[in-house]
Image 1: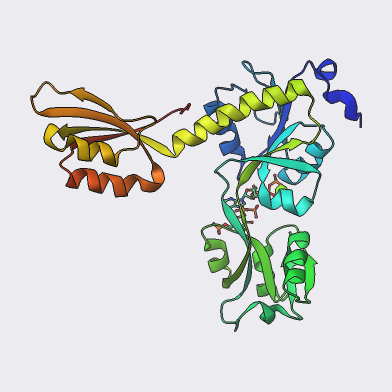
Image 2: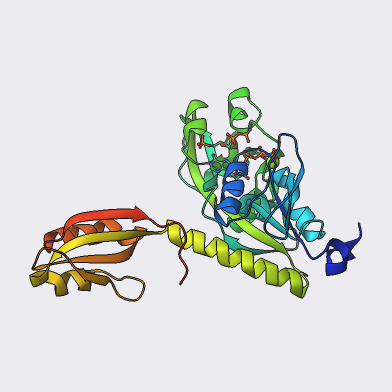
Length: 296
Ligand SMILES: Nc1ncnc2c1ncn2[C@@H]1O[C@H](COP(=O)(O)OP(=O)(O)OP(=O)(O)O)[C@@H](O)[C@H]1O
Ligand SMILES: O=P(O)(O)OC[C@H]1O[C@H](OP(=O)(O)OP(=O)(O)O)[C@H](O)[C@@H]1O
Ligand SMILES: [Mg+2]
């Protein structure tokens, strides 16, 4: 592998990003690039695509292979789950959490089985596709157990006598439930992240900074709502004090005397709390609008 081909002369200075070809992260990865204003054609069975309006080339790969490709500078960047990044232990840098592909890596045992604490795993056989992370977890807790590596359908293992316990990804818990298992320990909380090669040249780092700026603007917008409301002037001060806004709320007079229209931005976390207080303070006609991009 020619590691020097990530120079401006090697590939015209284009950033190369690896995303999952198909599976849980594929659609959200494409969607995020789109929301960043990057148009890529995504034809069926196409393994490589070029953005028409950003110097970016997209490779569609199995998610397990992405950290290796990024370490080797075959790709400069990747969108991949933290679970895969930390299992593969490749020399890559995690740049940004992306807010999708949220799940956890958990130990589970048969529902009827007694399980008090981690020591219940002592001497047991654990089936998993994450041997590195499971070994680390067991070592940290001074547990000796046998790890049996399998590449998929992990939840079936206890039911067919292959193992006493499993360690696999969980989100809704329905796969565990349907296989008669109960979750007993979470060993990692995971979401999709942006990873980068550790030796990007200056030109590619500049492009990455541009992409990152767009990603952060999209993420911020998703975490905030634009709120418009009518406020009686008598209570205007109190209502304004409840609203953070990007600098401070916008206040405009309404046609009806004694009333103002107030516009502001509220973060998702404190949204319902603030709305309740606004209502109590006399705000009326509250409209909540999604924000597409947020640049501070
Ligand atoms: N149930 C889930 N909910 C949310 N995110 C998940 C879930 N399961 C997996 N993920 C995340 O999505 C990633 C891809 O999951 P997927 O099941 O598509 O992987 P895969 O079968 O290994 O795909 P590939 O064919 O690319 O190897 C996981 O590594 C994890 O980060
Ligand atoms: O808690 P849940 O919401 O049920 O999700 C958990 C399941 O999701 C993932 O598999 P996926 O459905 O992606 O299929 P795969 O095993 O083919 O990768 C994971 O490996 C679990 O089996
Ligand atoms: Mg995979």
